[in-house]
Image (cartoon, rainbow, N blue to C red; front, side):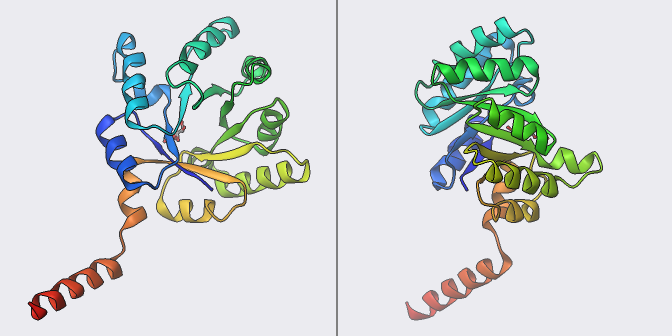
Amino acid sequence: MALFLDSVDPDEIKSGMELGIYSGVTTNPLLLANIPPEDRLERLGAIAKICVKSLYLQVDRLSLAEMEEQALTLVEVAPGRTIIKVPLSEDGLKLCRRLHHLSLPVCLTAVFSATQAYAAAAAGAHAVAVYVGRITRRGEDGLRVIRHAAAMLSAAGMRAVLLAASVPDIETLAELLTIPGVDATIPYRLQEPLLRHPGTSEAIEQFARAARRQH
Ligand code: E4P
């Protein structure tokens, strides 16, 4: 039930990690798209210094050989705490197996169905990123799909972590965190709704008013 921050922005990551609520950071090529390609590795290195926990770093090459070469470079960004994200495909599954045999953890990502999650876990994935929000936007129920995947993995005795990604809102996050075996990664914009409640703000104001009366 670990929570991750989905960001490549050093300020967001610093702000999030100071709170102590995240188990690490997840990244993807879309988040890195505004950074020149030649600077991306350096940015990931900077993130590794701010976040000293787990880092999910995604390959963006297309062929198996190139993905493998890039994966071995990404592992060096934060040795021992990098999980390599690989989009689910036949080559992605092959790479997952190869890295698994090297004892390197892999997260198969861009997973949209329970059967894909099963295949990812069977190939030795450490984690399986299920795109809950995108599934729902495509007309299915993202929560239902990830619950189905969790039941499937549990029935098969598979230990892969289901990483709920593409989390659209705080209500969905609250539901996701009730599913055994599910971690979640959230965008920075969900950090505030995760923490705020009008009742808490009201109580803090009352405490402050009471404190002023006593002094
Ligand atoms: C996380 O690792 C995923 O890549 C991310 O949550 C995808 O989210 P999006 O659907 O908002 O792009």
